[in-house]
Structure formats: structure tokens, C-alpha cells
Length: 98
Image (cartoon, rainbow, N blue to C red):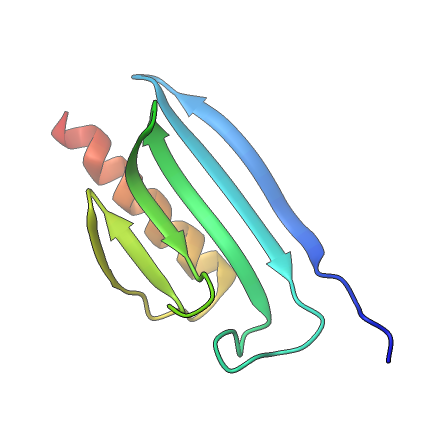
């Protein structure tokens, strides 16, 4: 049996005004899993220094979920494009409140 690696789909890092760093990393998996039926592993994160402001991820054992200012909740994944839009909207909302 040959092991197939995940393929990097997106890697982006940007520092926004106000010192917020946004990082997005998405991998395409070789096959779907129970936790990742969409065949994606991802981490979208906005932080200021060591403090996470927003994070969307799907680490093993948790499935699709998000962290907003320290609170974790489920995330209903539909498409990569929608997830990125939702993430950016959360980041923009936090930036407007500052």
C-alpha cells in the first residue's frame, strides 16, 4: 500500500494594520475521512502577538469548528470560498470593534 501525502492548496500570511496577523493554510487530503469528508485539512487564524482572535480549523477529534475570542463552536463547512469569506468577515468584525 502506498501512502499519498496531502497537497498544499493555499498558504497565505499577511499583517494587517493594527498588528493583526492573518494566516491561512489549507491542504487537500488524498481521500475523505469520517472527520474530513470534504478532503480538506485547514487552519485559518488571526492573532495579535500570541493572542488568537479568530481561528477556523478541523483538528483530529473535533471536526470543523471555530474559535472566536476564546470561545469554541461548531462550524458548518460548505465550500472553501464560503469558509474564507466567513473567516474574513469575523476578522473584519473584530477589527471594527477596536
